[in-house]
Image (cartoon, rainbow over all chains, first blue to last red; front, side, top):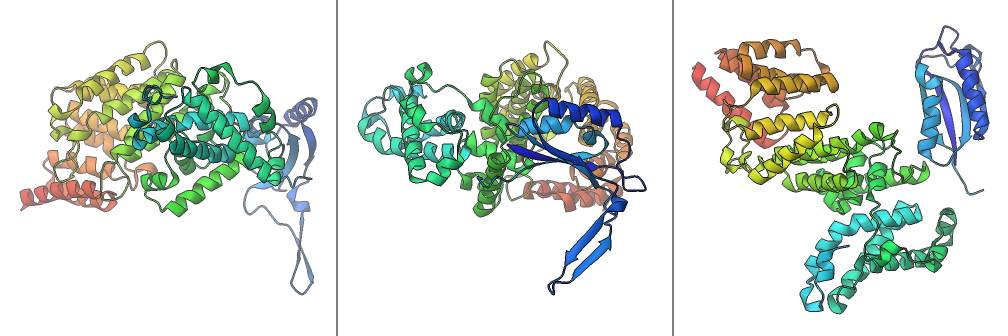
Length: 115
Length: 427
């Protein structure tokens, strides 16, 4: 069963980057996930100041805006998709993620359409 | 499966009502065994009901089979096979099921013995899983383990049946789709997970004991369901001292049920209760469990609360209650499980030990606690101490504050009686 771990930075710095996460911790965690054979995919996202939002109106016109900015104070900093037997195992991996200590990790099952 | 059922051999001796009573007791056991087998709560619930319906149809006429547990299990498995044959999509989705193989497979020794293996513990942990909404955990536990129907659970929580049905459906959907496992946590996880299970049972008990709203103060049936649940849990986890502590606490509180309401359903506080109406044997059992809970390791919050309840129950009068010991136990409790409600109770105990002025000083320290805002026992306790200090005008105004916050009619009636009394003193 696949779960996405959405890594939400608790405190963003002035560039909207996750504050307070040690690089070594992340590297160690990344290695653990891969060595456990559960890694499906995962990326770390660039700072929020680089983000751009696109909307398409009913008339088909495209609106492009800078941002969004960290009004919510909770910024998606990256994600992992892992393949593990059940939610308890997914929660254990989420708890070990450095992002859970600086912010929070949201665990969401990946929808299975029977494909 | 029930000795009662097995003992009642001939059809004439098996009235339908008693068959249903046996099922109520054993339904959770059958459900847990089927969940274990199928890994799917919906299917297990459906075929549990089917099997029980079949038993209700057959047993009164044909007699209870020699091995009722095995009979129900076999019937339920056959129903599951039928169900999955009819619905190939469902069957495909439940790829983990091996129902056909199960049917062909040998029957386990436990089932041949006529008794289902008791696999309810994993169901306790699934129903109380922290990934489920707190309000859904108690509902699911009552339904799956106490064997209550959805309308019964709805009645217990004073919500419309449709609302409860939606909540239970939502919780089961999460269990299925997020794949919350049916498993007993390992020994290393137990300290983290067991308090959640105990909390769910205790919340059922407190809802029954002091219904948070509505015309009646106590819904004893709900309190008794909670006691039944924790008894099951105690059999499954005999070495866990906090399980003993929780059972002890609930028995020691429940022992006072008859004295707690007056003839017209009004609330009677412990200081005015007729202690002769307390349930002696239940107190005795509760006190025995306190010893178990507090022996052999550091005390847990339920064990300490049970010890406090025991001191109340063992005192012949309010005046001879061991207040110094109760204050000391509240201090232990504050150290292991700090909460403003515990601090409030400690202040009330200090007032009994050292006088109302000392208690009031402690209560005033809690004035800014957000958790006590809107909690009517806080102004009620303050008003009581102000009254005892002769500050009647202030007491009356604080009683009015409590009156605005109290949820049940008997609680409001008690506060109104106190208020009337004080106003008469003042005039």
